[in-house]
Image (cartoon, rainbow, N blue to C red; front, side, top):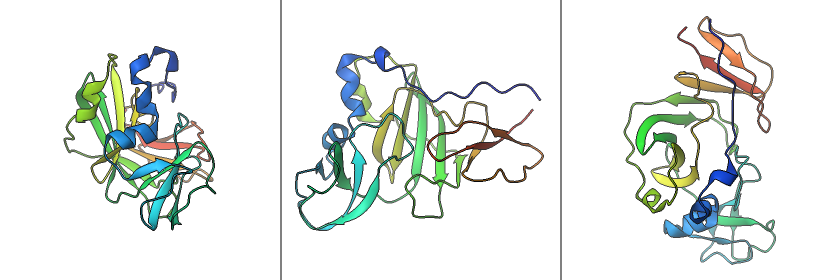
Length: 203
């Protein structure tokens, strides 16, 4: 088996165009997209469940995010967070290479955690390049977006770091490494509470 490329999960902040930095502000992005959202400290318009997230989080993995019932005030949530309506449906991660779709993967999760995925697997669907990305000033080779139920929730100026190797699925390992199938390998790529990934290999 050939050696797998080294895992990378970084984005070169200093190469981003200054006029594109707002794409990493999830509150501003959500506001541009017309979502029901606001900063911590601003009351919600009506009682309901909302997702509370850091406004900026380049580390990913749903860090410090949670879904809470909010009646009105939001002052008790951490500074630097925002609230937004909760979307339902498939959670997709799509890579675009110079604006052309390269890969689309779907997250599978059987628990209520916002980060502890059971599996990500490649699916054969076409997701048009989001119209809001036409506002970008910089020229980026790779753009990765995440969507829930067709609603854009995140933009990254990189590719999906869990599908570097031509694999068709990636299984996060949170505890001990399970027994691998014949065509599987374990990739040592810790991130947050994840120890690594199990991926399928063709060679």
